[in-house]
Amino acid sequence: MMTVDPAELSRLQASKTIGIIGLGDMGMLYARRFTQAGWRVVGCDKEEHFERFKSEISDFEVVLNGHYVSRKSDYTIYSVEAENMDKIVSMYCSSTKVGGIVGGQTSCKNVEIAAFEKYLPKDVEIVSVHSLHGPKVNTTGQPLVLIKHRASDDSFRFVEILMSCLKSKIVYLSAEEHDKITADTQAVTHAAFLSMGVAWHNTNQYPWETPKWVGGLENAKINISLRIFSNKWHVYAGLAITNPSAHKQILQYATSVTELFTLMMKGRKQELKERMYRAKEKVFGHLGKEHEMLLNDDILQQFSLSKSPPEGKQLNSHLSILAIADSWSVLGIVPYDHNICSTPLFRIFLGITEYLFCTPGLLEECLEVGISQTEFREDDLEFTLAARSWHSIISFGSFDLYRQQFERTQKFFSPMLPEANKLGNEMIKTILERIHEKET
Image (spheres, one colour):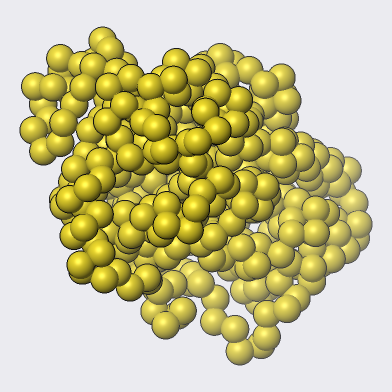
């Protein structure tokens, strides 16, 4: 965590204004945290929301639109969907303060930087940011990417000092490095949990009410899937559709799911085992015998939405998790290399995958279930179809189709989302505390 000279901080806070264009969940998080830290903040959302925000917000200034934000702000942050970045920047860039700094909060920096370079005057500096977590996660200790694309050392130092109030772990990357790492750590993770939700929806199952979905790993899969569907669709669509690296990841995940399910259906046990052991070696082979896994069954059993305890051990092929490791193996990704830039959900899913592959006998059990038992065959088929469907939507580049698919399933789960989100938050907090203890 960087050291800030109090005199320097006081001088900057007295002379600088921070602008936020887009008061969604993350924009509001930034605006409130900056205000609480003593910065002067001005923000806006869509013009039709102005009166509501003006009446509801008293801790920082709310103005009609981005023109008023841009002309007053020394650092303007565009906190809008990646889909709309080009449009919004083109609308308000002409009002940017002379010599000001502009940045964005999107998960795809190439799209963001392209818009800035296309529309901003040359005297405007560009420093972008990305907090690698959701708006309901404590920012302390979480990764925060800073991208010095076009800025003086003094301007970049100003942004560093501003962001220090979040108490995050600052990571310095280029736009290209950021997009590659976020694709590696988020694209496949999101695809897996989105596909789980759609598969459960298509089979008309609330998994916490079905005995075969009760258990440690199932708890984590259900909680994270429902946590994703409790958020807004564009949080995930932007990364998936606008980041070219994400397309490759999601294609490979759909391919891995399909090929592994085909091997199970055909009973090709030896080929399936060889492929999974190869993935295990490539992804987890560097872990020593003394490595302590991120998760264990005691932790995972604590967070169940089910009102009834499981009746004995629940067997499952865990196709969704097998396909994750297979994807990483095929793409040559070692997920531990990206821990410094990983989201809370990614760290948990890495822990789930590690648990399945590194717990003695568990991988073998899953492969045997996939080959010889038919109880999950229908569910695995639906999951395969869901994974392929998400890939098709993303390859078409259709935000409308993405939104329809997401919100249709979101509506199906909506009665349970508040309780699931509460439990999911508790699970994530507990697991992240455990990870933090291991790292320190």
